[in-house]
Image 1: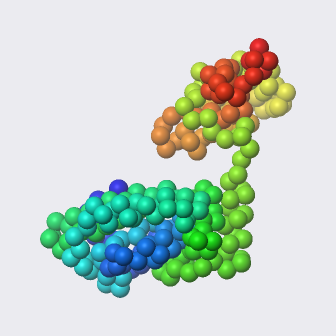
Image 2: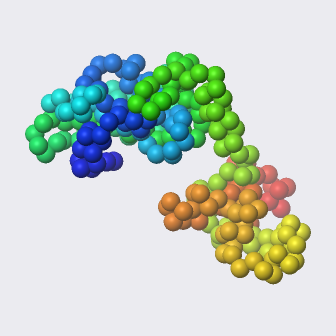
Image 3: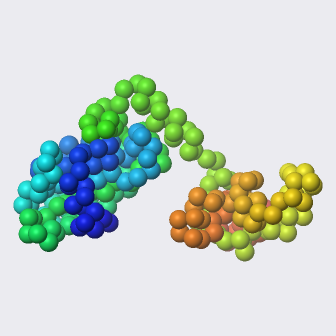
Length: 237
């Protein structure tokens, strides 16, 4: 969630690929298009987009809106009404301005890992401060991004698994000598997490933000514990 000072900064700046302002509280189609465009994140900024409801789109001046619970519920429903697919990750909240100028309803939209995101079958994007439907070239960019992010099951992070769940002796004594030459191993002083990541057994992108280890599904000492309904007795034995 953004603070009031951060919100005032967004209101005082011009609209951009990550900010849209409106005084409307009823135009659900417009809101959905904006959410779709932010989720597609055409510039690949990996930063959230903000739909600010209750502010003039040109000047950013607050419109004196009193944000109701009903409005917040309607906005939260944008991600679950089935019109935007795949469903985006959003947060909806109210920021009360201490100046007494009213409230701002904020819809914070995270970039999707599975673009293109479509609203009623149309791919909406932002070209700087303008919102529009993606052309063939722009949609191709989003499709390639989705393909690049797609990973097989064994390469996906196994959230909650730690290094203690890995058969490290099997990795260091058996797999690593077969996958990497002896000279490289002798000169390698990187942490074991980085060695595992280089061979797709560890996901550093998941580990860093939360400061936690996160193994992939590829290599475990107790697979039945992580996947109790997916591992056959023959595999475990």
